[in-house]
Length: 489
Picture 1: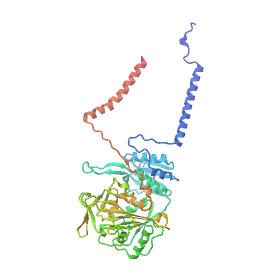
Picture 2: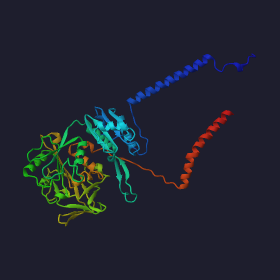
Picture 3: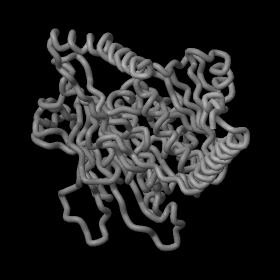
Picture 4: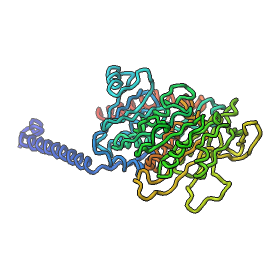
C-alpha cells in the first residue's frame, strides 16, 4: 500500500512487445495494400484530367492507331528542355505510352548530354548541321521525324502591332499519331514524278524551283520517290501516285494517252501549274477539262490578302468543305502568283461525272489577270481543287477510286516557300488523301493553348513580393513558435 508508484516503469515488457507487434503488422498490411492497389491500377488504368479546358482523352483516331501497334516503336524526344513546347510534348507522349506499352520513350537533351546526342544522330542518320528540336519515331525499319516548327499554330493578327505571333494551338497529337501510323504501315509505296518536259525535279536543291523538300515530305510519309519518262516507259501497274509538277513544254499525245488511261482506271494524280507556264498548252489542261477542272490561263492577286510590299504573294485563308483542308481551318497558305483552278462550268456535268470540290479561294478582293495585263475577273477566285470518282469494277481497292488534286502554284512547294505558314502541312495532307490515308485527315484536331495575363500596379507587385518573401516564411515561424510555447507550458 505504501509503495512509491512513481518508480513503476511506464510500459511493462509484455505490453511493449504487444504494441511493437501491432505496429509491425500494421506496416506490413499497409505495404500489402499499396502493392495490391498498384497491381490493380496497372491492369485497370483510368486517367482523369483536372485542368480547366483540357481534353479529357486522346481522339478515337489516335486510340485506334495505338491499338494497331504490334511491335516496339522507339520514340526519341531530341529536345532542349528549356524550350516552351518541351512540357506539352512530354505530357502528350506520356499519354501515348499509357495507352500503348509498346512505345519505348527516350528523352535526350542535346544541349546537356552531348555524347548521347551524337549517338542518336549517328543511329538515326540525322544531319549534324541541322539544328533544332525534333521527335524521332522508328519501327519496322522505318523512320519518321516531327520537327518542333511543325507543332504550333499561330495567330498573326497582332504581328504588326505587338511585333510577335501568338501561339494558339498545339498540333502534337495529329503529327505524332501520323508518325506512328507511318512506321507501323507495312505497305511500300512509290510516287513517280513525270520527267522530260521541264518539270520540277524532286532531287533539285535550288531554293526556289527545287523540290527536294517536297520529296522529303513524301519520304517522311514512307513514300519512295522516283522520276519517270513516259516516252519510253509505261506507268507501273502498282503506281499509287503520279505527280505532274508544272511542265513547261507540251506533253506528247502518246504520253497523254497513258496518263489518261491511268487516271480513268482509278489512278491518283497531282497536277501542279504556275505562272511560268501561263502561255503553254501542255495537254494536261485538256485532260483535266474532261474531269470537270478548268485551269485558268491567268495569274491571280488579292488586294485584301496579299503580303505587304509583294502584291503577287497571295495569303489564302478561305478553305472549302472537304476533308483534305479541314485541318487547315485556322491556318494559312502562301501562294506566289497562282493561276486560277476551278470547276469547269461551260458544259453541265453528266450524271456519272466526277465530283469536283474547290479547296481554297481568294478573299473577295481577288483579281484574275490575263497574260497581257487585262483583268479577267474579280471576287472569290478558286485556286485549288480536288476531284473524286467512284470505284471501277475489277480494279484493286487502292486503285479503284480516281482521285486528283490540282493546284495553281508550283513555287509554294519549292524549297524555300514550303516552310511558309501551313504550306508543308498542306503538302502532307494532299499526299495522305491521294494515297488513301484518310484516317490521318479526320478526328485528330489541334489542342488550343490558353494564355492568362494578370495585370498589377507597382504597389500591388510590391505587396505580393513582401507576402511571398516575408509573409509566408514568417507565418511558418509564428506557427512553429506557438507550438513550441504550447509544449513548454
